[in-house]
Figure (cartoon, helix red, strand yellow):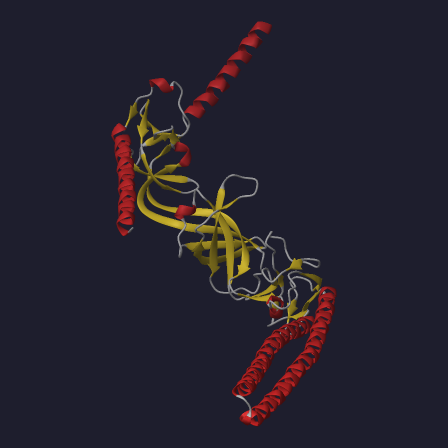
Length: 441
């Protein structure tokens, strides 16, 4: 009885094991002909297409101010709906007060320098004028001497003439010296006045900046914090600069877009004006529609990955008061619709380093068929050549692969020929470009 029981148990195990194995081997599908939609599924985030930026005061960018960083000391809560002119944020007054105090001291110093320069100028010019008065008196005296020497000897007359000429030259030199000194002092005074005006302008600009440290809304809207260059949202304590001046934005809630990222494998399929169906995680029953409005030309690396993604923006048709910035969206981008195409499940296609093929079952025989593939979606792949409608394909790889015949090598050769032609065309294009550059040079 024990031996018989063991034998029965073994038979049951063998029966069910062979049944499962047979079931696995018989997983098949048919080649179907009909319409195929190619879609790409991705998640995104709602943003406003148009928004008004709330920025640092414009006077902060003035070259006279020379304040390159300023801290936010107070900021209203994100999501607050504000009216035009309503309070948004406060910037650090202490920094401006310190700079303003130093600027006022510089202005006072510049004013003192001008007053000292005026006194020195008046004194210097007064000395020059005294010299001219004395030189003119000397000339008049020499003229009298010359007139009185008319009856003297020629040598005395000659000496009187020479003395008069010398006195006249000195008078002329003193007059020219006064003119040059006036121009020199005028130039120096102008430079000091320019420096004074610059310092006065800086003080004025700092006073304007000080009065503008209370930031107010330029128009009604919902406050959304901006992000710094590291992607971190602006908050109390954040440091801004004239080169990164955005504090927050007031989005236009009537025109929304979904900002999403597509991996580099699928980005070639994405084109502007493609239709998109969107869902909102916060409102599962809502279905929105839109279209692709922009596709980035340059990719960016994914965090902690070597792969690249490209930014794609989708404009949502119409408006919905329930939509809010930063909501998560599910985007289904329709990249292509094909009619009367042969297609099979993705699991039916196998590949090596050089070929792609399917396993076609004909009665009890299975052969390996090389195929030419078309576009694909998440579930199906279009087959351009190699199979016909109604063919039975095996979805899991059969046993004894070495005994399976491979057909369709003409398809593989055609693919190689096309690749070779594309390579030659590319090389020809590059050569032509190089020749044109040489010719232009």
